[in-house]
Length: 384
Ligand code: ACO
Image (cartoon, rainbow, N blue to C red; front, side, top):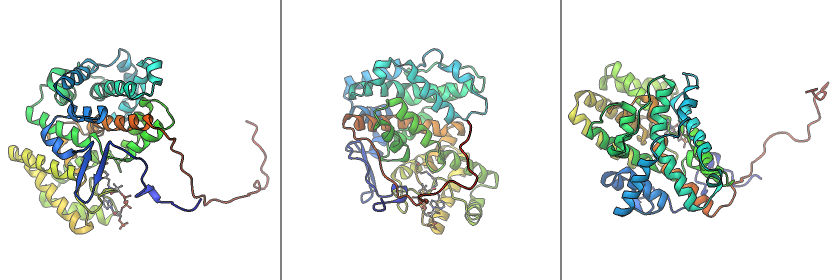
């Protein structure tokens, strides 16, 4: 097959969906009919998760039952942490989360695990979403031989997540920023991780396997891993003198042929990412309250202006979110796991949709290798 090849599947439509779409003309991310940025401004992450998983914004009764379920399932089954503790200390937080997500499948009733109805997938999705924060924070604590903490659902989803990460009562402003981060990360159309999940789901494998595939894809520095790289860059720029050193830092990286993480995007390569616009406002608010944040945000502006001038590229969500998470005191190793925990909602919505009306993903290749080769001289079949 030689026709229809698009490297990286650029501009290829891979699904009909009611979950979300990037509207480039209106610079809008539509999630089940709503503007994601408006949602981030006006509602909390669990409402967005309900919208994604159940298909509509919850009424008061549904809100109570959804939040109740997130609280009820926020703890981990006994044994999960014991297994994670046996991982080598060098295991990254993202690999720990991926392993933990995979382990959780073992605690599902095998019949429920294998059931693909929207109702069964919704129930599993809510359990996975609920357990993400504890798996992230306590998995990381376990790896570092630290005592684990119990979730505190009374603080809300974002508040309990920050509590588990930081081990102290979270500052309400940090919770509000963190909640917006979660909503910005909840869903973004056919990202590589979502596509990976839909491919797995299309084999009628279970939701857990699809979420694990998404997690593996999200780790990459070209995808979710960019938020960590962005934060490390701002820490480095601060050490070199802050805003005054930012332009030289970017130029040096570009001259050396490096990419600046947190810039560029397959879909809106030359346009602003609406999530980045929102999160820059959040950074401005953080800078108003804290001179150290001000210094970082000043550097952010120089980096962004230099990239626009030099490459015509705009920040994607990971640039301001990486900095925001750093400023509210989330350890950098946990940035991509936090992204994953939020994205469970969107990925689950895609899996539910895929399996409700499935067709196996099975594309073709444009083969460019040799044909009809004879065995090499002296070749004999191996004995093993
Ligand atoms: N820094 C410097 N140059 C860049 C960057 C960047 N961050 N991104 C793209 N470019 C340049 C490329 O060098 C290339 O230039 P050239 O045409 O002169 O060779 C051009 O822009 C096109 O780049 P491609 O890699 O071909 O475009 P693609 O659509 O494959 O890339 C990607 C998209 C992978 C996201 C890219 O922009 C990138 O690597 N960004 C940095 C990683 C990042 O921030 N990822 C997060 C994505 S958003 C998210 O996951 C929430």
